[in-house]
Amino acid sequence: MKVVTGATGHLGNVLVRELLARQEQVRAIVLPTDRASSLADLQIEKVLADVRDLEGLRKAFQGADTVFHLAGIVSVMPGQQELLRQVNVKGTSNVVEACLLSGVRRLVYTSSVHALVEPPHGTALDETFEFDPERVYGDYGKTKAQASLNVLAGTRQGLDAVIACPSGIIGPYDYEPSIVGRLLLNAARGKLRGYVRGGYDFVDVRDVASGLIDLSEKGLKGDTYILSGEFISIKKVTEVVNTLTGKHAFCPQIPFPLALFASRIAERLQLLGASGAHFTQQSLYVLRSNGLISHAKATRELGYSPRSIRQSIKNSLEWFRSAGMLS
Image 1: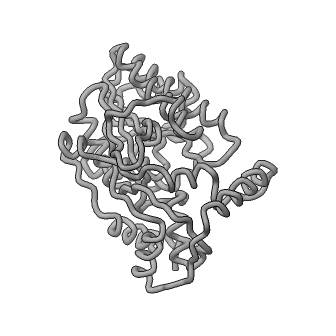
Image 2 (image 1 turned 90 degrees about the vertical axis):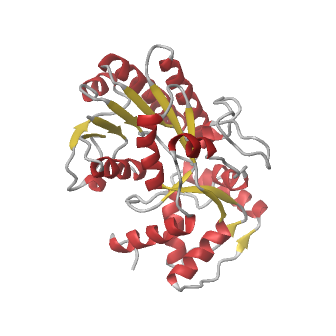
Image 3 (image 1 turned 135 degrees about the horizontal axis):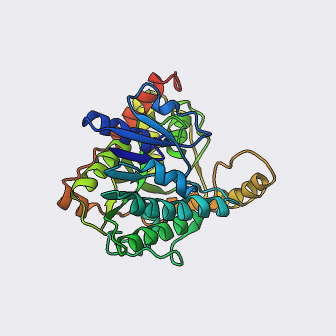
């Protein structure tokens, strides 16, 4: 039995689909408040539980061979420090303890490249860089770094665990949609009013899902594996979308100082109840951060080979159309 926390999310539902394609039995952990539309019609067992509830997790993990822990809060918005700590840090500690109590054979934890200390520009980020909450940027990165340390502490208690660090995830089955999904949708609809110079390393959600399964079978206990794709600028993303859709809406480059100023105002307004900001200080930081990320270890030890970002963008737009989210 394979158990997946965070099963209704973008990566979660794609992992469930990949496990089913490999003829695995899947138990999906679903929050009581989730609609779980991303898992509709899939032949799986659904269990209502919250990673903040240790006893509920212990029951949900009974009989599990492998637990894929994906549940977490991904946020670049202000004012969510406590929620991030409760879910990402305390929730992961509960998952580790529940695995030890339930006799789970292997835990595969999905962390993030943002949990690793970022090297200077020009130096590739790889698994030799450590998890350190004091030296990574942003509340999200800090909580994922601490959660990763909690998993490593579990291995010293006898838990067989391995850690995956994906870069920015993109691809089909993006039901919410994600931050990147909204970027693609706005660009395809001609509603993207501007972009900021910069870019990031994006990886296809299907490649990450396959990588997680390979980690469950081949990853070394206590090791970390980066599952990245390729770097692409935001400007290039819009150009690829324009080529694929045949639309060429005008999209000017916004000066970084202006975007940073606007992000500070928008964040303050959001704390007062306004709608989500188009730019936040954390999202702008990511676009200017070191996007040189190496997946050489995963390729060497797991045979990991991610597809091109252009293919991922194409498949994302095709899925959005099929789901009625893009005409």
